[in-house]
Image 1 (cartoon, helix red, strand yellow):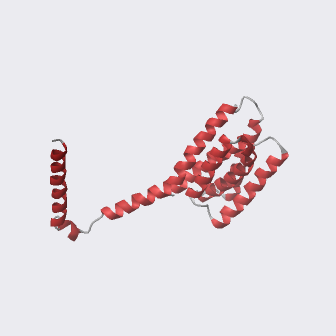
Image 2 (cartoon, rainbow, N blue to C red):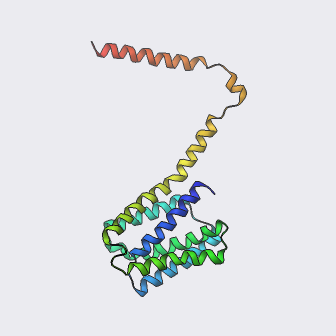
Image 3 (cartoon, rainbow, N blue to C red):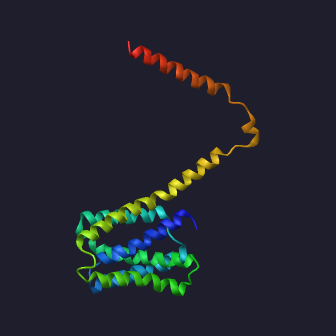
Length: 193
């Protein structure tokens, strides 16, 4: 499993609980969660998980949008159900039987929605804090693929063949370095007069 997979796994697990907690306690919200869960489970089981950077951007954007504009909070059940469905197939990818992974993933939004009915479970300030954490986690997940690709490129560029490592430093690199040093010193002396 790659770092991208683990970042996406953590984002979907945390996002499921946060968005399911924000969902209104209504039949429409429960139906939206169930529909999004089913669609995401089938799509990710058939097509595989979506790219981590895309999911990270969507989750971070949704968290910021809900945090700043509460009128968009009715989207939370769709996000919670979709992330739960994706999380279930990711559990299955880690050798959890699919017949067990799907109910485990479905249990989290159900439990969060049930507990969210209690006033002392997640007060509004805690929900706002959870959205901020989800924004940071989504942004970090979106950055992970680029960072790992850059790291791999840097490692590949630093690997040299033994024949190239035995060659002396080219003369032009010494000339450019020495020229920059001398010109910098002359400019420093000239600017202080």
